[in-house]
Length: 69
Image (cartoon, rainbow, N blue to C red; front, side):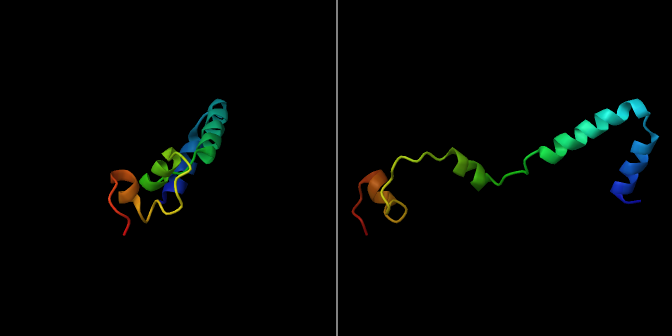
């Protein structure tokens, strides 16, 4: 039996008084954010400090003072 069918059968067996709680849980699950990747989580933490436009290319220069390549 598919999982969706199994869940529907279990819901059908619940007392009517519990269906409101099931509906609320379904709404909460539908509104929940999808899991994020580690990269997207880190990107949310990034701070925009008016970095130079070539920072990605010359990050060693800006972080450690080595000559630009």
